[in-house]
Length: 209
Image (cartoon, rainbow, N blue to C red):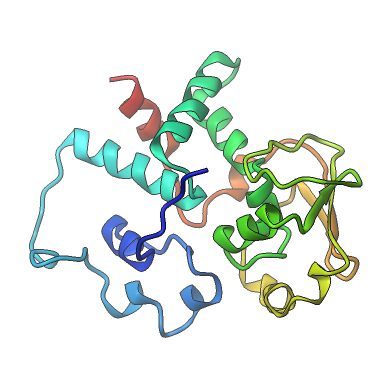
């Protein structure tokens, strides 16, 4: 599965806000956006007025980068959400939130979604007692997620759990970090998804143009 491997701090600067792509670094003074809160490049500090299309495009790019998916896959999530009953934007965010790599991150076992994705890809995550190495797997209510015995000793996992209190708590997930397990209580709650701020209606407008 293809993924973005370029400098992620530039993505935060380009979108004009912290996207929390590098875990603990984003909460420290080393954060690139904290030190240089303007877009990268020669003309980054210039005053730029965005068109309506550009505003929608930037919001789409921001959401896509937050969850670490490329355009083709992200477009697929939108199309799937558009086929469902309910508000398309919220359905799309629900699908993204229930990705296994995002769930592992929300549970506190990965300080960033990229770190959580690596845990999944390397086979360190079990869902309902079975090893699952597909980051895009969509969990359902009642699913139980746990780390393998080996992963519970990883320094990165222990450090992530130690700093989990800094990150937003997902009320739709029940987590026992001491036992390295968690369970999905229900569908994601929109009010939980405000760090960073997401304006999903602009994404809907972008794809509906």
